[in-house]
Length: 129
Image (tube, rainbow, N blue to C red; front, side, top):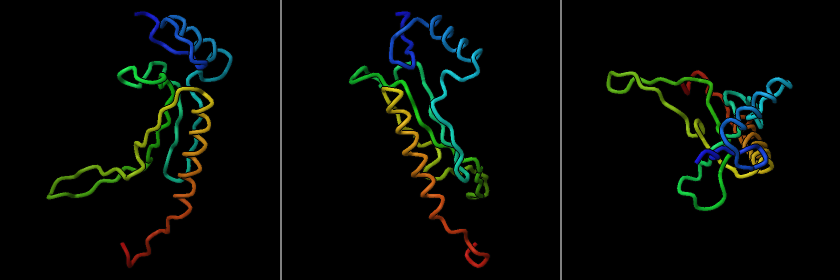
């Protein structure tokens, strides 16, 4: 089936139409897929139109928008003589939505939650490190 792609409005369209909409938006000076992006402390919160249904299994409404949280700090630890990257509990946090309105509200809510988290963290003093 050729019309697997979804517009920001939730309409199914062929890939060619989806690409056209993206290119027109870019020419007009905005990103078609971007719903929101914020940086709070060490975290980047990004909400985008995925374009393809990510509900996996076709049960329920299509999930075509996604918010993800990314830590901007790489943490590596020595674990039994080998270096490993360690992610914190919020890095790669993901939430998906059906509509652009849900995605905007979700982005705002997650951004505010991360802001509250960052504001509540007390830096370690030298003796605690």
